[in-house]
Image (tube, rainbow, N blue to C red):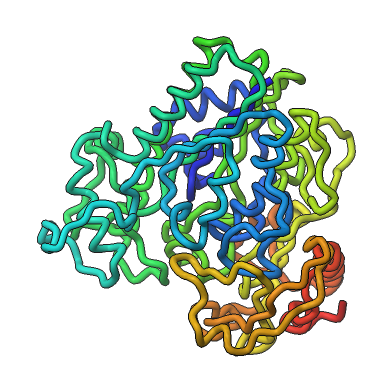
Length: 490
């Protein structure tokens, strides 16, 4: 028995043909849909990148206790559990956050790992002189933007791009180990994460009239650009999705060639989606997590069931990936896992869960039962009280600074910390970019309003969703102040 996970970053459900985007050129995603079960109610858990990956490893939510950061000393890691139980685990990735301080304990849990450099602002190639940047490019501040243009100078051909190299490494592992048993391969590419940098032949699939400035990296802000620029950005995103489709096809081809479908689990997934002008917003993390961000594509092939060309309405999310891998290899789930094997969701005639939480530390706390989405906002403009609970005080790029660590307390153990106390640190930035109070609390009926354009007011439904929210937060052993922040009585 073998397992393969192909994981994309920021892959939009609403930009894939199996989910209705018939204008996007992605024949291999259509082919994948024919070979797998396609999930219609897959959601994110914790946002964004590394919080999601912590969920892959631990099978439980991250966002109610802390923000971005490494695996904790008390965390169970699915790749590590597999490794310890005789399943060889291998990661190939170009996801730059793995080799930053805020992600530095994830890739080391695998039996082996390989990386490809150069995505986004990855500090890859050293160049003191300013890079050559086309005059039509509007300058942006920050090291990632400058470094990206340095990196682009070394990515002239498609074979040089990080995604191409990542999939080449994955295919090499598949070929080398095609006759071996009990292994798990994770092929993870940063694409189609912004910036949307790819070859011209992918862009040529989407002809459109545009004579504006160079624009392939959307800001994390409200849309102020012209309709023509918004359309252009969507075309740029589609072009990069078509590149992703090409390399997904190579994995499917090799599975055909090596007859891997008979004994190899396949999961194709993403960490979250991305707003491309919908709701008058770009990107993620600042605004509420509408369906374009939270409602994700997910495909599963399980050779034990042989189910294909099917759609599933089961409520599933990112915390289910790790439990799915453990169950497939016959390894018990850990007591701390909140996720469920995807195969159990398919096998049961009844729903295995009432609802699911999702969100970002300090953002709305959201809950869905599949029909309704309830987005609970903090009741105070200052968005407090809010704390980080961690033994690994690390942000995306760097450890917490000295000022942040001046008011550390020790918190009593949570149910999942195996008796360990954690640091309790006042959250930084809770009143700045996490200013979600201004959006207010919202309730949406997905059946009547799938695009979440018209919030509803219904006292009875809201009361039921609040009760579900509280129940799931308590099951996660959410800190007491999270309830206070949201104006809830646990």
